[in-house]
Length: 105
Image 1 (cartoon, rainbow, N blue to C red):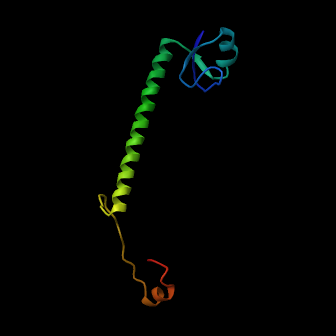
Image 2: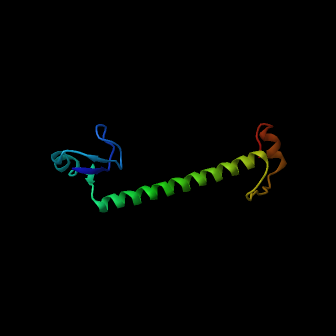
Image 3: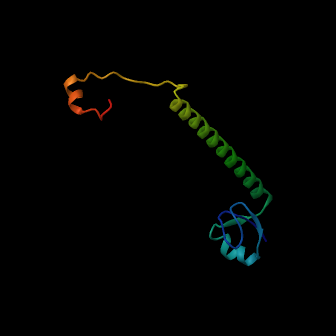
């Protein structure tokens, strides 16, 4: 019997693998515990759909991370490509001078 693994199983394979197992093993262990589903045409299509969704999400996250890294590098290098907000704070000079030279406001 062929099944599609929903979990990593050391002796069989990884998530998404289609493996051939004994019918009793599938019926009595893998299917009841939710470790696998029967490999039908419908389940195979669903597996491919899920793989495409995961690949899309991975690509989207990778692109977002690269954009964030590029922004960080440009900020460090002094080339501001995104808005930087600052505010002015009214602090008495006596507080600043008593704080010491090690504190940057």
